[in-house]
Image (cartoon, rainbow, N blue to C red; front, side, top):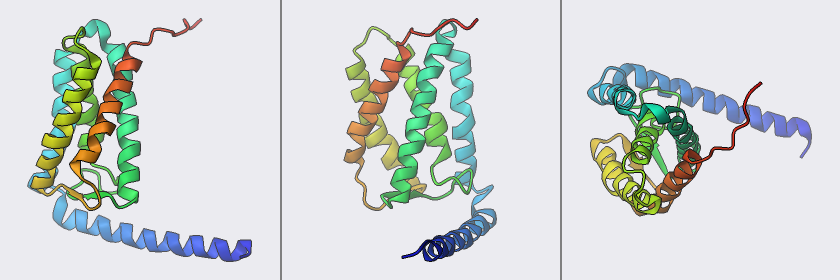
Amino acid sequence: MDKEKIADLIDENYYKIEELLDQKMQIWSDYVVFSGLWWLGVMLSIVPWILWILLRNKQSTDRILYAGFLTTILALTLDVLGDQYGFWHYRFNVIPLIPTYFPWDVTLMPVGVMFLIQIKPAVSPFLKALVFALLTSYAAEPFIHWLGIYQPTKWHHTYSVPIQFGIYLLAHYFSRRQKFQELA
């Protein structure tokens, strides 16, 4: 197939996606924004950060935020991949054109990890990772599914356990890094 035909196929696909995104925006603006589940999402996006700011270990803010940002990047990336491959999708998004659930990826996951890192720092990171993985996979995911926000299609909560376990361990590892060069 020549370059022009490939470009036409890609453009045609793009226009179909753009049309569907316009439809998604219309549904969101007509039915989702300002609904109870939308307000819940807004609160879940803001309140945990306020709690973290108030309750964080102030001497470790930078180190813990470093782990939180890593968690956010991993959560967003994996959530977008899962959505794009059709493993799950979200309803009642706070931000309509982001295919992930913003409160989960940008607030609940990173803030949860950051609190766990700073609470009882001498406890085994493997134990904390297990607790985090089990709570997120068997309590949080089923709860947001029950609310109707999260719809797994080709995914079972058990599949999330090793992923959540790994995310926590990686964040813990990064929270312990100290090899930063002084800026001149």
